[in-house]
Image (cartoon, rainbow, N blue to C red):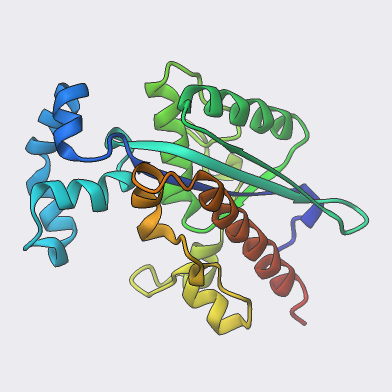
Length: 233
């Protein structure tokens, strides 16, 4: 199923939080962003109807990490498999988002020159646009490895495991947790810090190390999943 050599795949996962701890602090430190959140609050309610009874502040804390304009990237983990099967991993994390993104771009640019493909779960709809937009917002030119508006379809070097799992049925379910359970892979979603808890873990509990470990587990799972697909006969 996967014809690309595993040694030419850069496995990637990112963790995001809201740009501020809560809506009140956003109104204080980033009033323009807070104003935009107010304008788009109806969009959030339509996009996430299960949040209909939540306050604006609760929606901000729960959902702002999913939208690049209101988010902040706090961790990026990347890995590749060497010819001898050894996995090399590098994780960038910290409070200084611009510094983190510059480090990430540097590695992406190096991998672009080596003709690597990106691999992630929901990569095309989340990780790539999140990385690209946050780079632009921070005054950074995105890496050429990140597909842009003018990238031709046959030039896109991105393997989206969610896209693979859905097998053309874009209305089907396909969370990474579900894929792991189905394929007999230990899920990364059973730890102390999981995706829906990252905002609280970062802003309230200051658990950046645990967030990084969770991010790395997602990358490990991606490698295991691609290996299983490559073993199919």
